Each structure stands twice: as C-alpha cells, then as structure tokens.
Length: 231
Image (cartoon, rainbow, N blue to C red; front, side):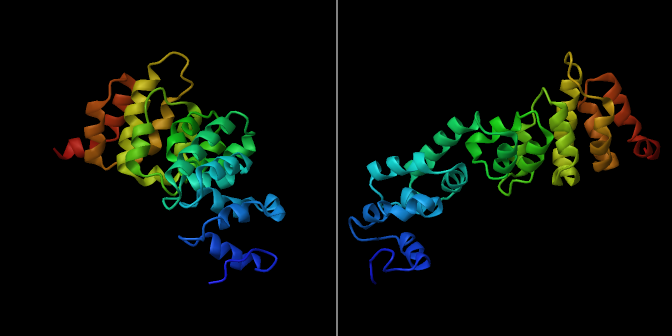
C-alpha cells in the first residue's frame, strides 16, 4: 500500500487511507499539516477521531472542527473514546451560541449526552427535529418525558412519529396530568386528546386510574366508556 499524501494521491484515495486502522507512524501528523486540509473539515475529522492519532494531535484538531464534524465523531463508535468525549464537551460549549437554525439542524444529530439540553429548548421546530433522531428510542424518550411538560414539547410530540406508540401515549398523559396542575403551565386539556385516541379502550381505562387531574381523569374515563358498558 502506498502511504503518500495529496497531491500524489487523489482525495478519495486519501480518505480511504485516513480510515485505515493502522497507518504508518507519523503519517497522520503529516496529513494533518497539509495546507489544503484547512478547507476540508470532513477529512480533519477522520484524523482527529482516528484511534492511532496522538493525543496532542487530536486536541489540536478538535477545536478546528465545525459542529457537524464534532457531532459525527461523538456518535461514531469506531472513534477514539477521548475524541468522542472531547467532541461532546466542544458541542456543549458551542450549544449556547448556536442560532435557532443551527439548533434545528443539530437536533437530529445530537449525541445522547446532549439530549436533555435539546429537549428543553422552547422551539417546536428544534423539538420536532430531535424527535426524528434515528437513535432516539421509546425508553430514552419516556425518560425525558417529565413534568413540567412545555407547550412546545406537547405540540412537537403531537406532530412526531411517536403519535402511534401506546407506551409514549401513556407517558405523555401521565406527564400532562402532573403538569396541568402547575401554575402558568400554558397547557390546555385538548392536548391530551390525540394520546387518548392512540390507546385502546382497555388502556384508556388503565391510564385513567393513574391520573389525578380531575378534568383529565374524567375525559380519559369518558373515552373508555364503551369498555365499561360491556363490563
């Protein structure tokens, strides 16, 4: 295998070498010093996250990477553990300065340590993007569904792929139940309707027995009435 560098190698060939598990000693450092790599952060990503990159090189490159590259490293199981952890730290530092548009783009790529921060954003667009995250499962989402539920979260949930999940529906109802009693919660009782519809008649009755907010409890029990009449 020829371990040369651009311009002797084409950029696609160079990228393949960057992903090789065992480059020669010193080759990654030489690659990182290529002037043209300053305009190619995607390639710098592979050097920064490479398991064979020296720690000093990794720490020099990570601050130069945009959030997209950092998010990719943070979620890449093949990346060096230090590269993943430092990428998360960098993203946490960048999060406060991101524009709303950047946050909407970032939400669907957010690494798991940042899910709680993303979930608290008061913007339905950011939350809708986050709820489409390919690595977000039912159990992690249930863990995030804690009172107080914001109107932004409630609206995003209604427009998400989770509308068909009875497990999420039950957790949303419980969270709504606890949130409706809080002062200035901004929620309305009608926000519960889509989640009650998702449940079967038996599940509605079971959910009603867990609820404490009088109006929500009555509403959920009323929609379980056909089952009660059969009994």
